Length: 547
Image (cartoon, rainbow, N blue to C red; front, side):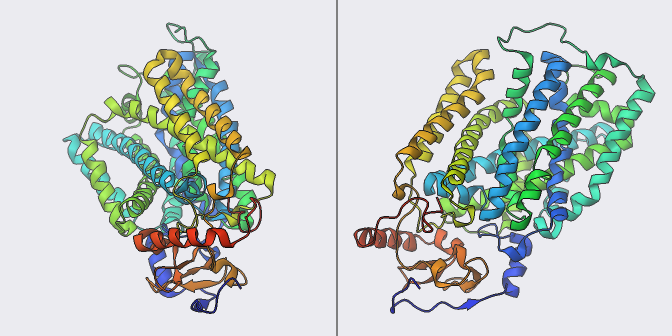
């Protein structure tokens, strides 16, 4: 055992305590590692995740791209995106399930504590924007059919959305989305049939070409592919949801629920339906999310309203949930403000309502374009790190993410992310049409190349702060043994526990360690003292396999 005689003996148990489970029912271990006992079955996880499938965004973005490059090129670009999304999310889902980490914790291992804090903020803000956009779509449909001031419908949408995510993935999101899934599938099929019955069928939608061909300097299918690169935030979403999957289901979940089959439906089928609807249903004015929704409501009446409500409620359960968890993570890490996730649901609902009152679509898409390239850079670094771990034989379940045992900054990871993001944003600002198309792929290439090169010269202290008295080595199995935290008095799996040098080396859990400044300062001081007294750790060893 890696303890000295002066270190207090840990209080070890091998089951979840009732108090921890009651808290987890709402918190979903949002500031902790998900223990094996709280993981979801394959069906439960799929039902929670499949809410993403029904977003009207996927229906409309396909038809919008087709206006610029035509149906054939759009479908080719979507098909390529389907493969890429499936591969990336498959990898992310497997690693998340095996490590138990969310985006914030994984980012701590790759970028250091500073980079991880920004990652949580970026993810939280981006998902909040999507929650605003999807919620606005519901409000538009309701106002178009029932009338009344738009602000009232904004308020109603936020009021009914918040309670749906007060409980977590395992205890509620899987159930509500499982109930609504058949309604969405039947509604979308009914919409297509209704459009054919009302307006007739023609194969012209398959050969549609833009009225005026724009000189983009690239093939139309490549333009379509880069548009979908701007929504790689889905990889981050995958990470935060897939961590609830069982380790033994990691491969199956990655291949199906988060893999190519899922994106065949989400991207390809939804995109094709969007193109068909746009070519079949007469819509006044230029195509946009607003006019498309109004067209569906005009076609189907109350059934159209129901379809829009079902589709957007399903996706917004995920949006509101991830918005609350990531903003909770950011404020807990950056400002040491620890509030329950349910409180953050209420806070973010107010924020979403207030932003809805502005001209949302007037600036939303441009903002998301910049955030998109930053997220593409994150994905590039993350996937490179996962690949490096695989090549080095470093297991995901030994990832080091504990705040007292990772550095403030990982120069390789954070440097690659910052440089690639800066180049991408500059391309968007000064690159004109070239920058708009090439910013995402160029950003990705730079992130991968810089981080891969940095791994060739990486030092162990980029990833791990060496300190004594590791609770992971004090138990037979750190994933099943629980150790009681001396600060919150709750018992969590030893895999996330540390020793507090500012408090007699008593055990401390992940959440308390992240919140206590005195612990972080004492841990740094202990690491400096300990640095010359231990043998160098080789990357890929058991202690450093966290990297």
